Image (tube, rainbow, N blue to C red; front, side, top):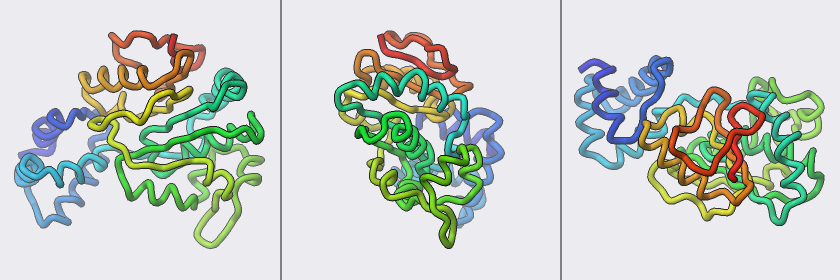
Length: 256
């Protein structure tokens, strides 16, 4: 069995459909998994995945290509600061959710931006990911300089301290984010009533068409009226999702 056939056999039942340009990176990651399991053939691994729920759970986090940086796509964060956050600052008990948060750069970026725009006003900020290992790294708040290369220098100086091993995010920002394991594709959404949901470069890149529609509808239901959904700059919501209209910023939608 070739790798492409392995993907065609294994991914659809998992609701996943990564883009072709991600396949080289996926092959490298999965080849390491096969080696760790003592397997040499894709067919043997496909059979293991199909019969073993634990291996399916271990496989799912390997099927995404994580590229996470502070302030990734700077124009998006500028849109949040100008369009979204001022209204949330004036609201009652604002809530936000970063799903697929990886090692924490996205929710921490939001926490920093919130502190800049809304001063000391509290934000209830939940961050979730499927992979416990990246959540553990996120809670540490320790990053290499490359993860901060897009963060404006004044913010880097204000919120990070140099220490052995990297740059440590300050405790006031680390404490502003609650991290939790969550499977966006298979588990119930966290309790709703969010004013802002960030679902960037995850569901609408890696999930199959049917799963995309289902997740989009559930995300819309989790938003409060007037709430905002952010997807990746190159992503688009699938057709057939009512109640979300695009805003004047790529990847940003509002619930009407």
